Amino acid sequence: MANIFKTANALLRFAASRLPGLDSLFVMERSDRSPRSTPQSPKMSRGTFTFKERFAVTSEYKRATWHNLYGKVVISVAPATSFLFRSEAVWPLRSYDEAVLKGIRDVLDVSEFYSRIGAEFVLLEIGWRDEESYWDSYYNAARKATEEILRKIEASLVRART
Image (cartoon, rainbow, N blue to C red):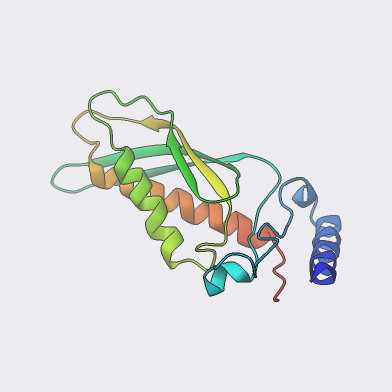
């Protein structure tokens, strides 16, 4: 098992030598060290992906309808042992934290990384426009941000099959 991760990390180092900056962002580690001691889903038993450093993604959702829709989220992602979400955003009228969380979860639920990414998602800030900011706006902005986060991770990790 350890040889697979050494090989994967060697491949990651090789890729990083060809793509500057890649080595400072992500590394693949085995975070479920004892799969026989605790029951886990089949996806989880293949290993959990983690990364080394926090990074942030900004996403805006704009849509012109009979009333305009606007939502902007800044979400940071940091290494963690499992999925975590918290909000530090200040909402001017009412909180749409639940819309952001649902947007993140919906994208993760259908991704290859479901149950395999150890990350803390933090809603750092939001963009707000009176008469244009609704639940759907923040749900869709969070979905777009999460899709971008997964694209960055998928582009940077070499997966090892166990």
